[in-house]
Image (cartoon, rainbow, N blue to C red; front, side, top):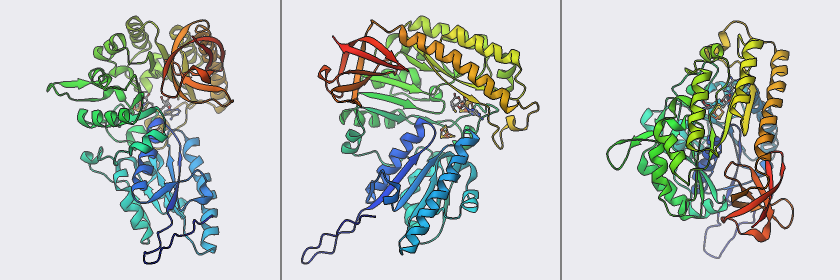
Length: 462
Ligand code: SAH
Ligand code: SF4
Ligand code: F3S
């Protein structure tokens, strides 16, 4: 590692070399947000971030437990980091290894049993104790932090400094809700993220104002069931996400709002009205359905039918005709027949998704799905996934092609990969490439679409 030479003045103590932390993030946007918060908290303790694992004094893996592959990836990564730790030890130096996120919560001290080089296991509900946990590790010993009191859940880490927010650009995530009470039979999230809890309006508004003050133009509200968010509004009434969005839209500087991920059962009238009446709320909705078969939806404990979902999608489209709809799908849930799968394909065609994510069912330990009968053959799962993804790709292409020739507004986010270009984001999330003379980062400009790539757009300024 390149050591920075200590600065020594005549009568001062040498300044300590800053310690370096490398954070690797797996999984969903909430892990991205949490990783940022962990980095911010460690910065307050004198750590600087590094993009190079080999330079780090502390490696933190922020993990995902959603599918077996995601969880297993962590252990192969830990093998590589153990080798690095051993090399360090031979040089008489230390490397602290921490595992955070949903694998940490799900597996706890089992992680240290399987990967003894790990020093720290910390679950998502206890990140406010991270700096203290690291100090305890440095003092010698292993630390497992996965127990928490419910009221601690939003004991969040301190908000980032203005300069840090600015360095992350003009878009930002803001967690408003965490946890899940839905218990879909395939899913680990209710176990790893605990029960549904909402942050207070005051906390959310304060964080959004701080982001806006640092130049953020677009805020994406996060939650495992973000539309289950509710809280007491300043008017003393119980607010839902719809009312919260209206309040956040009043903050000067915030031009665009988004939220993810929502559950069909929590799409209430106020939220649909926000899509109709709130220009800041972007015309995009990610609303997972998982399957188009009522039999499978029932076995998954989704507690809605395909018809309920289609009806809901119709109401949302009526409220906001230009909305882009997105979803998640699982193929090969136990008991899924060819007929059930055909129902899923049918639903895909009826909705006309602008974007979608699809997965092969992965049995997860401790979930009801894992012990169900009639598991589907791996080869059948693969074959269904290929067919589903082909249908989704067609729908997606239809959507982006429908934008050709249209004038759309983009928020400019960053320089393009090629010189002379900048990249903005369309209202429907497609990266949009424009000539750099079109405007500066943070501007929202009108452009005319002249071409498309795989879920990206090429456009000319007007
Ligand atoms: N809270 C969100 C999604 C959380 S997980 C929601 O309710 O929609 C993101 C996606 O991963 C899910 O929508 C689902 O499609 C997929 N997923 C979850 N568990 C899975 C499993 N065991 N196997 C395969 N895919 C899974
Ligand atoms: Fe998982 Fe279902 Fe909860 Fe989404 S709603 S996080 S899929 S249990
Ligand atoms: Fe994965 Fe946990 Fe997110 S399991 S998808 S990181 S909530």
